[in-house]
Image 1 (cartoon, chains in turn blue, cyan):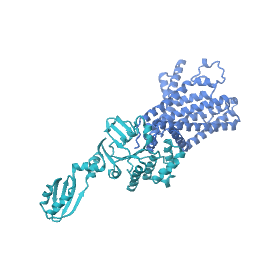
Image 2: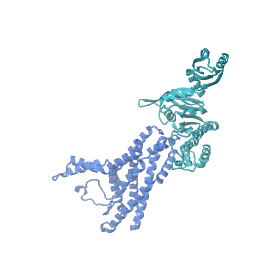
Image 3: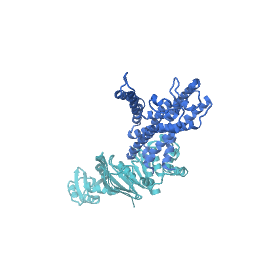
Image 4: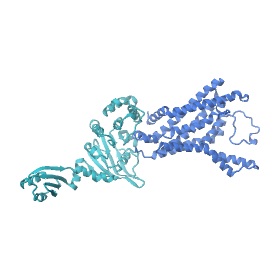
Length: 313
Length: 310
């Protein structure tokens, strides 16, 4: 067994045994079951929604009267999960004095950080897969129908996107755990960034768009478009937005375009479901950006950690 | 055979020099004490030997490997016990050692026997299944030595192994270090600021002060070197205290200075001249009641190199 796999299994065991893991799993399961159950109720009661095509995707995406759909929560909790499994990855090892213990063994320094990152991803993957299985069970209980073929492919694809998205937050947490010696500092910084990118970015986007293209009563169509475009570009900084758009398109086969659907574009379209490959094409830029964000974030952590001096005190 | 060799190694942090032009040589099978006050650059030197930090200039060889470019080869044969060694506190001592063994590529099947062996060597066999969080500092330090031994190292670096441990615990650790060398033929580099505590087990010591090796040699040799500058001290009590004695002793070869206070003579000399002094006293009709040699040498080493560094 190589050093990387040894560290990986150790970290994975640590993650699964930790209290934070249990708390987050319980939270996600509760939120998932409630929101999916309520969405299921909406499907059951509203006659327009009775088509059983892509039923499970609807269970995940349809908002109910009292709760947003599950994918909204997944975006929120996924980012928190990432931070929680990343923010003290390195600095807690420093404060316990175990960095020297591990790195004075014949172990490449990057194995340490790589194994931690991969263990974080694996933990997330297991959590996400479990919650999907639970929700599938819920769907089976409510409707007696299980997804097949295209729907499963979309689910699997969505799962991998969710893991990449969470991977970005793990990488961000690890980065701060390298930059700051105190775990409280790295946690706070991560949360501040998370808060900014998740909530504050909407306000920033609105303010900037209002400044550049103010919407007045006698506004033209071009200005409204420009307003929406600026807003959209600024919001693309946030991985949450990227993930949200991707989720929307991947889980909703009838979506043809992102952004404002102008009448001349939408007119005459027959809203038959797209194949998965076409949906992926629509959100390819978002996907690539999301992936790059994760890689860049981890890359910076990697470089900083490789140059760091390993001192036990 | 020289297993560690550094040539003109320097390390700068920004513009502060931590280590300057260090030429260190450690022979196979010896216990080398690298001694010096806190902040003298000992730990930096160790980190460079292990490739955990890079030297700014100079060359380092450990068993012929360059730690900067071949850290894995160096770490395979070198055990390192850092100051304030940390373990995973929620794991037992055995689990911690098994993890270290895995990181060294030793399978669990092979390591379980080895773990028992090293635990009994450091006297922790009974508490091997305790969580490390329950261990005392001294026990953790011994577990640290066990973790170093698990990979069967040829060379072991111990950073401040006895600091913060009660005298009894410290004595046990020193005993272990000697045992390591006697039973396994391991070369040891021992870093400490506690000269008095560790000097008796070191074959050679190098005294580190402000980033460079101030003096080097066996403890006895160092004592003589310092004595060469400051001399031996003798205190003699006389039965009568004749006045002209002081001058006569001062005329002896090898005596530098004699001062008299009543019946007591304080003599500073370059070599051991007790016999001659006794003879002179008796020949002059006085009797030496007692003669005390004061061993200032190590004290002086301490004052000269340690106190100043803080």
